Length: 280
Ligand code: NAP
Image (cartoon, rainbow, N blue to C red; front, side):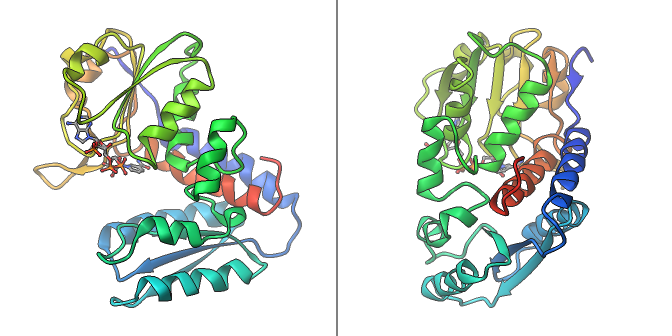
């Protein structure tokens, strides 16, 4: 397997250590990250447990509120309003998916932008265009961090981002553009995906379709960042990239699980400490 695996767990552990130091510099007062969920989704429960464990390591208290099934959009927004007013709450996150009938964008917009540690409030989303976002969206920031870990010179590098969602694909494209990478964004309207991916020095895949990108679509030596999370046929979690064939061709590859996911959580905690006043 020529590709070097980019160990997201290791990168995340290093970031958390730095965050724990930064947290100590803020004194002993509580710093709380509040997670809201409507109903109980087993997949979200796994994420929340991981977030709780990582937060504790960085001295951040995580408060988990599970609102009952049937909670309306207005009730959820009222709950967010209460958290916006609580001074010890540095950050608020809303676990997805939200039930039908609740507009995720309305909910995200109700979070005080200074507590929007997922970086999804329109004000924070907009600020990434100006290069200095207070809270860069966590998954996009994680993808950027993992690319930088490889040591590749982003200036002039051809990057192809597959997937153009508001929370993942588009912000990644903007963040990498700031490094003067030449960025192409592919999506459902792209005529021939392989024509783009095969010439890319960096391929970032964020679609949610197992096996979408395989080895013969990758330029030898390229950096491949797999953001997708899918349930494989045997029940195991797999990414959007066909791991075995891409690992034969790529220079660097993130595994799923253990790649982007842990670093995304670390970025969430970094944003939380920034919200609490840390310079991290
Ligand atoms: P999403 O909102 O469903 O967006 C998927 C994007 O892929 C859309 O822009 C869609 O285009 C595009 N697309 C669909 N089929 C395509 C195809 N055949 N070729 C190219 N593009 C295609 O999903 P998301 O929130 O961005 O998440 C993407 C994946 O990343 C999911 O598997 C999700 O679970 C995972 N994820 C992982 C993390 C992490 O921390 N590791 C965090 C967030 C998300 P249209 O909108 O035009 O259909």
